[in-house]
Length: 239
Image 1 (tube, helix red, strand yellow):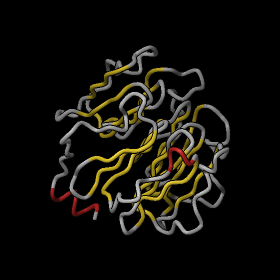
Image 2 (cartoon, rainbow, N blue to C red):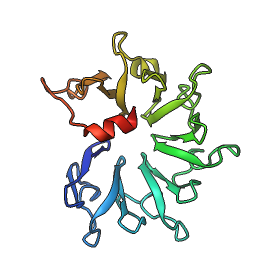
Image 3 (tube, rainbow, N blue to C red):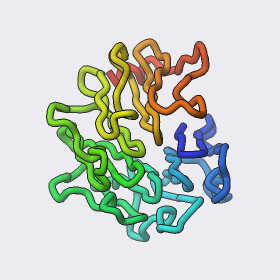
C-alpha cells in the first residue's frame, strides 16, 4: 500500500492495483492497460507503478512531466513518487529522477549506486550501498541535511519538510521542521516508518501503529486496536 497526499493505492492479492481518495487528476484511476504490478507509489497528484516486466507506468497530473518516464529509463527495481517529481532505481542500482526541477532531480555526484529511494515534497533521499543517507533538493528546514550522528540506516522516508530514518538499532531519527520531526520519547524500536505531509507514522515491534505531528484530519490517530500483519519470514528478513 502507498499513501499520497490525498489518495492511496494498494496492490491486491492478484497483483492488480486499487486506488481510492481524491481523483481530480485521475491519480486514483489506474491505466486500463496496466495489468498486474510489482510495486506502487502514490505521489501528490500522480501515481506510478512497476509492471511485471519491471517497466514504469504513471498516471495522473503531468504538469511537470512527473508522470512521463524517460524513454531510455529501461527496467527498474524501485519507484518513488513525490509531489511533482518521480525517482526510480534502475537495475544497475543507479538513480533516475524526472519532473519538476528544484534540485531534487539531481543527486550528489558521489552518491553512486543506491539501495533505496524516497521522493518527498521538493527533496529526495536515498540509502547508499554502505547504508548511509544522502539527500538533495529543498533544504529550507534542514530536511536534506541528515544529522552528523545518524550513522547507518535500514530505511528512509521523506515528508513535506522533514525526513525520517530507521537506524541499525531500529530506533527512529528524524530531521527537518521540528513540529513534524520529533518522535515521542517513549517510541522505542520500530519495524517501518512513513513520513507524510505534516505527520509521521511507524509500525512498532508489537505491530501496532504510532503516529505524531499534525492531526487535524485524524491522520495521527490510528484506529483503536489497529495491528499490522507482517509475515514471519518477512519480519525476520527486516531484522
